[in-house]
Length: 118
Image (tube, rainbow, N blue to C red; front, top):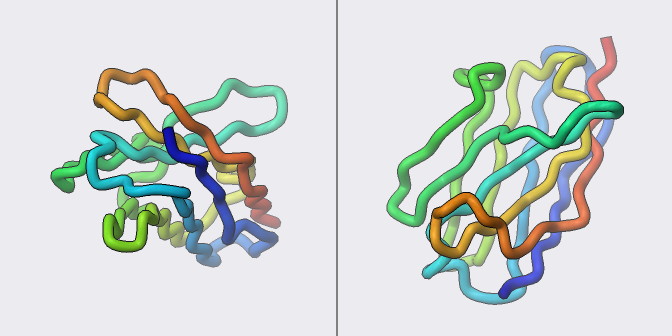
């Protein structure tokens, strides 16, 4: 299984943008699903977006139209472009890999903090 390292988090004002990156230690070509989750204080971890190796994507309703997930298999990297950020987007964002696309994530990154100020 690969190791995942997220980066790109930070402090941004409402309406701003950030791009998160998740770099894998090995090839992600054969990993069926790569995903971004987030966890806010006192809340459960929730799915933000996921992308299949074939390119199909799925987004949480709360981020549709604002966030875009993409993967660059040649760079072993998954991105999350976040636009029009809101205070409720504040959370630690985690990257995960689901080898078989069955909802079981074999690897998680350490997380990157995103804070949106009002």
